[in-house]
Length: 79
Image (cartoon, rainbow, N blue to C red; front, side, top):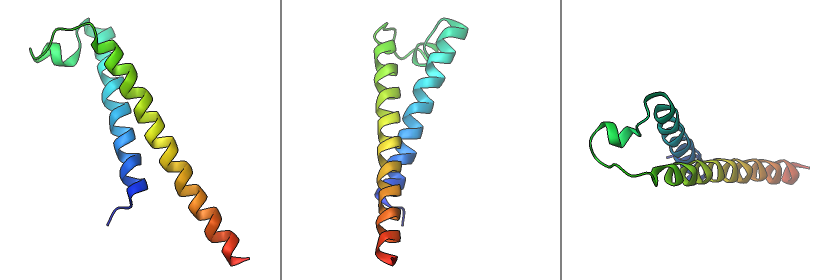
């Protein structure tokens, strides 16, 4: 079973990747990905992308730090 820290890492990477892809698509085509699908036409998506990139980075880095702290604790117990 996947540990929660790994799940948070994958979720963080997915959020970061989706938002980054949307920003790149916006710069290349002038339209956000949901606009291309005809779902939403809203300029607030830049804010949404920025929030998703921020949360994605936070989830990934925080879970990675927690994972490394667990490894350090295990190594300290071996001493």
